[in-house]
Amino acid sequence: MSDIHQLGVADLAAAIAAKQTSAVEAAHHLLTRAQQHASLGAYLAFNEEATLAQARAADARIAAGERGPLLGVPLAHKDIFVTTDFPTTAGSRMLLGYQSPFNATVVQRLADAGAVTLGKLNCDEFAMGSGNDNSAYAPAHNPWDKQRVPGGSSGGSAAAVAARLVPAATGTDTGGSIRQPASFTGITGIKPTYGRCSRYGMVAFASSLDQAGPMARSAADCALLLSAMAGPDIDRDSTSLDHSAEDYSLALSQPREGASATQPLKGLRIGLPAEFFGAGCAPDVLAAVRAALAEYEKLGATLVDISLPRTELSIPVYYIIAPAEASSNLSRFDGVKFGHRAAQYDDLADMYQKTRSEGFGPEVQRRIMIGTYVLSHGYYDAYYLKAQQIRRLIAQDFQQAFTQCDVIAGPVAPTVAWKIGEKSEDPLANYLADVYTLSTSLAGLPGMSVPAGFGAGRMPVGLQLVGNYFKEGELLRTAHAFQQATDWHLKRPEGF
Image 1 (cartoon, rainbow, N blue to C red):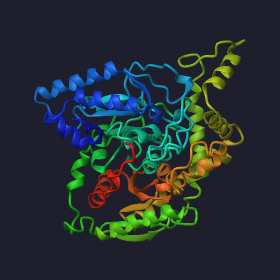
Image 2: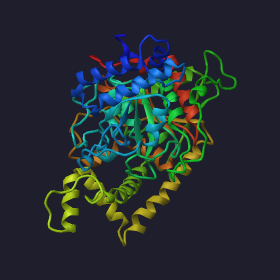
Image 3: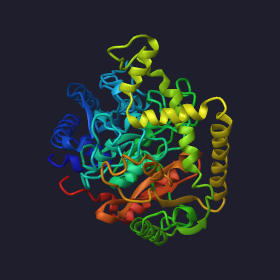
Image 4: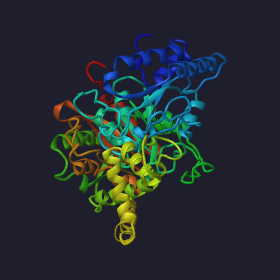
């Protein structure tokens, strides 16, 4: 098949199962395509021998009569998940050449389902950034406009899926790092409830916020991946929730009570936070979001005005809590146990200083310094403790909102993707770009981005959907109904 790269997860799995192609042919085709588009900067590492070995094993399982929704399907992983067959760097020179002795739980579960790993995808260093231009190796480029960022930190994952280099990929979302790059590149991505996907084997940034999730072209494909990824892992991850795995694909076809073929979402209440639709959001983004919401009304949903009054506080709260946790988590990278070590030093303290100065990039150093400061004696109560108290109030705001609605909707980001390097000298401008995604992460709620149109420069715009705890199925069904009625998720960048 010559059009393998145009097939999504479900379609490619069906083609492999029907012997129209094979896992080996699909893997080889996409590896070749990834090399042809290497200038996109989406991938950081390949291991063709390991990939083709996995593909042959998948073909053998199919020949033996086994069937599965991911069996033989090529995927790629954000370079924040450790893997035995591929190096894991977390986008940092600190981990240059590191090879893990075990797979992350998310990686292993997808492998057990028969997925084939194509390679490791570019990301902001230790997942810290909003544009993927903080990668220590090279920035990833947005396939819709190579002069623009693909979003971050899961920018390599988003770029690879949007450019048809891979049908789906894993990402992580700490403050919006699945949803924002999905929005910027016109793909679908979901961050599940905190604790739904194991963090075991995920290089830690902020432990109370980091969450894995799938990125694909459609809600239906995301449902297939999330069904394999999610589930308890309490023996290895203390933050894992003891909540049984679900088949999220079933939720897509479950009709709402009172729904009809023309109005599949009849009775669904969609809350619109006033804080998401103010002057801070660009007119082109608002226009696309409003048009998407009008489509939802045609599908039977009711729009309800709500308020999340502490939305603006999510920025200072997040940029206290996340750096504080990063300061603690990244203390392990000291040149003693693994990772980079300075070549020349005088004593232990000098080795620590030189190793960390050489291994960490500017943004990581900035966040470590902020985090160390807010955790220091005399400032812990004034900053960190206060931020945690406000975090609880932000979560309460969402629970109040969910008494009025079933799903919350709004823009993912205030603007479309910006030019590479445009905000590099202004960290605060990068931080402000996360204003609509941070509160969801702080509350630990599931959220997703759905392609909803285009804005300035013909760049994609995503619609953000937020659900209550463990309502991933409802979110995916809400997104799927929209994608059945529109074709925004089918649009692809010119040349890909």
